[in-house]
Length: 333
Ligand SMILES: NC(=O)c1ccc[n+]([C@@H]2O[C@H](COP(=O)([O-])OP(=O)(O)OC[C@H]3O[C@@H](n4cnc5c(N)ncnc54)[C@H](OP(=O)(O)O)[C@@H]3O)[C@@H](O)[C@H]2O)c1
Image 1 (cartoon, protein in one colour):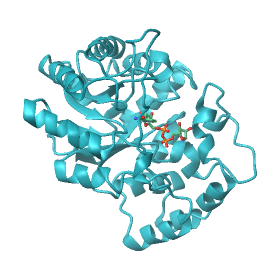
Image 2 (cartoon, helix red, strand yellow; image 1 turned 90 degrees about the vertical axis):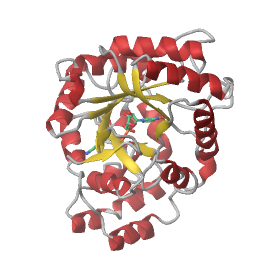
Image 3 (spheres, protein in one colour; image 1 turned 135 degrees about the horizontal axis):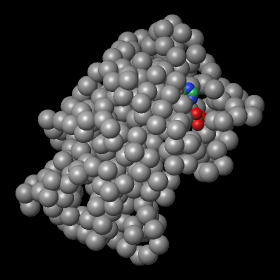
């Protein structure tokens, strides 16, 4: 495994991290979830990403249980707050009330006294930004959170948060967690240039486009049994946008390029996001331990300029790059 600094912070993260959205507490049984976490630790992954909302809070409990016998100081545990964790007006969003309550609940479920990174899962237009940042800063001062970050915030929102933090002496955001893959490049236009300037690292999600960039979904054919596209707990809806024949055909055309580079398609997808120096870590998901091992082998693999250009040629026309697609709900969900 290789390690990178999380933005300009002094904390290092494994360049491949393991996330448990849609899998733990939902798609796979606890035993399988634990086997994936064990495989992640075996290949040298030290960074784990979850969220209060995943599997209706169950994903944090599964991860906490799976990691509880591992030395805490050897791990970086990340979680998030914003999406609803229960009924009620205040069980959501980025108010001071919800942030503090949700953080305490996450710590209980994760069986830890602190998380290494606490992230605003989206931007909350119904809470003053100062209130959110002050609550985050208080958690840092209380020792419950080591660093703070955001997810899917626009460049202008990150910029506004940095200004408030600098004016008020609050802890600065060190990370941004956007969707980023060969197919979804919306952060390249605005978020990455700002973050490079401000020392913020990207921890990117769905680098394999939820499994689509493994090439296992074939155009015109039913999805393989047991894959996310057949997961009726919600995975099928999440992946649906990528299951278009035009996209799947192009992905198949990446196979000879991956072969030439001596990589599996999944490894090519992970190495592709890591080729961007502003990316601190690629968060991969996995429903099986062998997927973790396959994906983690992308660590340290460099792609040359010629290969990157050929990938762009193959995917021309199916890549999304519009910065306006970095979005948060207009009102709290
Ligand atoms: N901040 C946010 O808003 C946000 C949103 C989404 C995700 N995330 C984070 O990002 C993490 C990763 O997201 P993701 O799960 O969509 O990432 P991904 O790595 O793009 O997709 C993971 C899924 O693809 C399939 N897969 C992965 N490797 C494979 C391989 N080698 N061979 C065959 N199939 C393979 C598996 O699904 P099947 O086996 O079921 O097909 C696996 O669960 C999440 O766990 C979460 O921590 C954050």
